[in-house]
Structures are given as C-alpha cells and as structure tokens.
Length: 328
Image 1 (cartoon, one colour):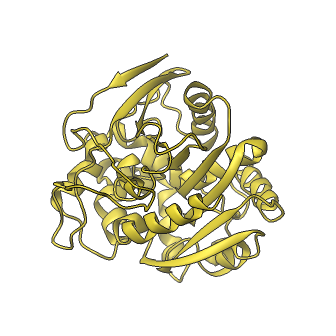
Image 2 (cartoon, helix red, strand yellow):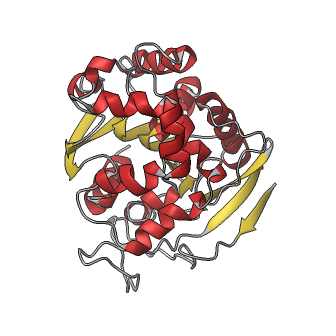
Image 3 (cartoon, one colour):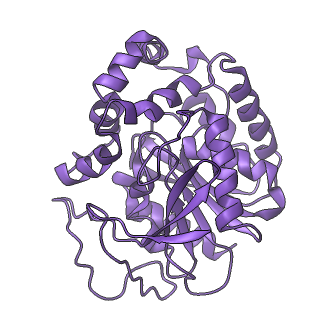
C-alpha cells in the first residue's frame, strides 16, 4: 500500500542523519540558513500511503539507531511536516521519526469530498496509522490541532502509547472569556462570513497569523514553503474549517466532547509526558496551562516562542524531545 513519494520544490533532497545518540548531527550540514542560522530546507525523505478516499504524504527517516518505538510528529493549522524540519534531526539518530501532512495540507492530497472537520481528519489519521504503524508502541510529539488529533488517538489507543510530548496544544475546551481582550473578536469573525473572505480570499492564516505568531521574521523561502499547499482559494478550505472547529463555550459540541474526554484522560493517565511551554506563548497559557501542569508523570521545559515555536526554538525543542525519548 505504501509507495515512494519524491517531492520536488522546497523540500527536495534526501536527508541522511548520522546521529550518535546525542541528538545532534555529525558531519557537514549544507542546508540553506536564515540570518539567524535556522535551516530553511526540509531534506527529509518522504513516502505516501492511500488513506480512505485520498492520499497522505509523510516524512519517514527510517529505522533510526535501534528498534525502539517510532516517534510521530503531528502538525496543526496552517502548517505541515515542514514545521518539524529542524526538530526531527535531534531525534532521528535514536528513533525512526515520522511526520504526516494532514489531508489538504503540506504534500498530502486534498479531501475529494471537501470534508475537513476534526472528525474527518481523525478518521484519516486513524487510517494512516493503520497503514504505516499498525501495531506496536509509539511516542507522539504534538502541536496545535495535531495535539487534539494526537491526544484523541492516544486516548483510544492507550496501550500503544510510550510517551507524549506536546506544545502550544489544545488541552481543554475553551471559553470566550479565555481570550485576551480583543482577540475573541478575531475568532468570532473567523466563524462568520467575514472569516470566509479573510481566510479563503486573503489567505489570512498563512499571510497574517503564521508570521505574527513567530518571534523572528520568516525568510521568504520559508514563507513560500508554507504557502505552497494554499496557492488557490479552494485549497485554503482546511485553514478555514479548523478555527471553526475550535471548541468554544461548548460549540461545536462533538469536538468539545472529544477534547473534554481526552483532557480528563490525560489528567489521570500515568503515561510519561513532556510539556514544552512557550514564553510568551499563545494558546497554552492561563487556565489551559494551569490545567496541563496538573497532569501526572510530566516534565516541563520552557522555550522562547509565541505559537509556532518550532520556528523560534527548534533546537531547544529537539533537545528536549531527544532527552525525553531517550529516558522512556
């Protein structure tokens, strides 16, 4: 069912990691870098699998240094596996690392039926796991909507979870009162007809939300990598649906129920956890962060960043994940 996928464009190339168990590269890294020294290129090898009615593409670094549980990195909105490009090398020397692009995002194909609700992504992610990692333990590294999908999958497959690392995550249903003053108006707009114009016509998540949620300026080549899946109005639909799925004051009720269920489960689960909090952070702050900090068997580290913290602190995140995984 699996076939090799060669991506041309920003991600082109073959990534060879010669890690020694230290979570760092040995050898020469010739990737293009931003003025701040952050690599632009994503040279990890990719594969593709058929899932239900479409096809998903994923990073797959191979077996790593041993045969222990693979590590699965899940992204959110409006990103892709590209977000993890500078985190994965810290872990790939020890573990097989996989990072799927959600349907309609990254290099994955769109949904033929145009369905991008949380439940639609969940069904397809289930099918991806069935195709790529049908059995055995896994460790999850989660961000944004990838956290909601990953936490939900973990709750339903608790016997397979070796550990969970998460950052800027959706840990509980939100209240409108959780939003900073004025920020609620933006999310209310996204759930209205104005939101369709903002996101579908103006590509709001890519052109505004993404760069404003990173401390450093993104290189134009990085912006182009993020823009690539969303060049047309129709292709931006996944980025419109996600903010409308965020459970706020109990709506949508099915998503609120799922988030509440996994939040309650995580609050009692002994599964090892790594909380990577952000300073100043964006969504895992305030009441949500206080709740997450009550979860058992958890270590916390803090890195610089707003929401897409992998673009500000990739090496700090990579080191933390490497150290966490190493001790599982």
